[in-house]
Image (cartoon, rainbow, N blue to C red; front, side, top):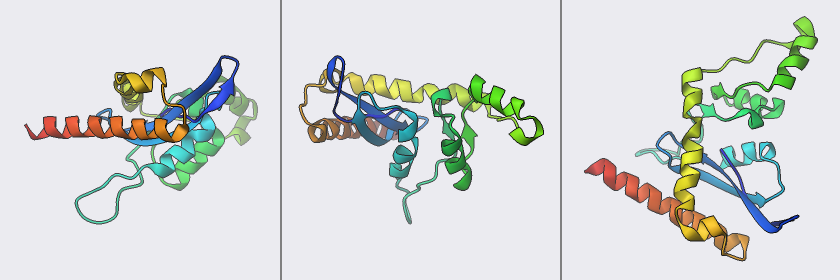
Length: 169
């Protein structure tokens, strides 16, 4: 999962796309932030935007599991996923593990995650490559966050349509 919005950095105007993807490298949710914004605080806002339509009933809002890299290994993110009973596939940072071990028996249990499922976290990186294949997104020509987000949604729709037509043939 990654994230984005317009902001100022040393290099000028930048933006960052934070997103969630499914296992087939299809986008599920986008959040735009300023380029200097950290990734971890955008974890929960992106997950709150995930809505997967099913043939009957309400859209699914709870994924089967969340795989992310160590940047998202915060206590708050883990607590959010535990509250929602979502399996966590995020390795623990070394400093977090050291602090936990330093506390001894009061430090809690070691973090475990499914290593096979963790190997699939690159689906977000592959999705970003698919998005950047569209020059307007890669070069950031749009001047406003709203128009950039509209371009992201248009490109996302193209990715979903291409995948759906491939699945029916």
